[in-house]
Length: 92
Image (tube, rainbow, N blue to C red; front, side, top):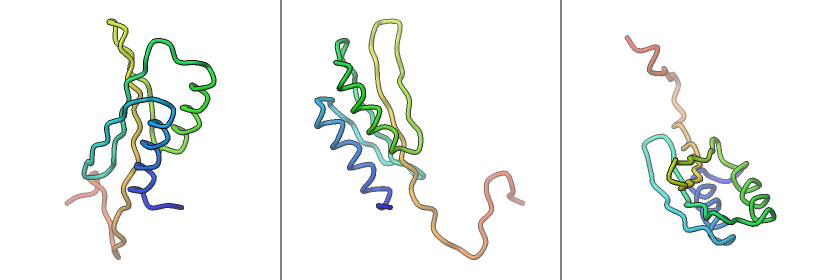
C-alpha cells in the first residue's frame, strides 16, 4: 500500500486527468482533496470519479442551494508507531 501522501497526490492527479480542478490541503491527521464539479459531467466521467474516490479513507459531495457542487476526499496520515498510544477520549 502506498504512503498516504502518495495516495492523496495520486487521487488529485487522477481527478485532474478527468478534467476537474483540484485543491489539496495538508492537515495534522489527514490530507484533503477538493474539486468543483461542473453541472454537466458525463456518466462515464462520474464512474471514473467514483472509482478514484473509493481509494480515499472518506469522501463525499457537498451540494449548495445555489447549484455549486464540491467533491471532497480525505486520506488519513500514518500514525507514528509508539509503544503506547492513547486517543483523546483516554487522556488523564
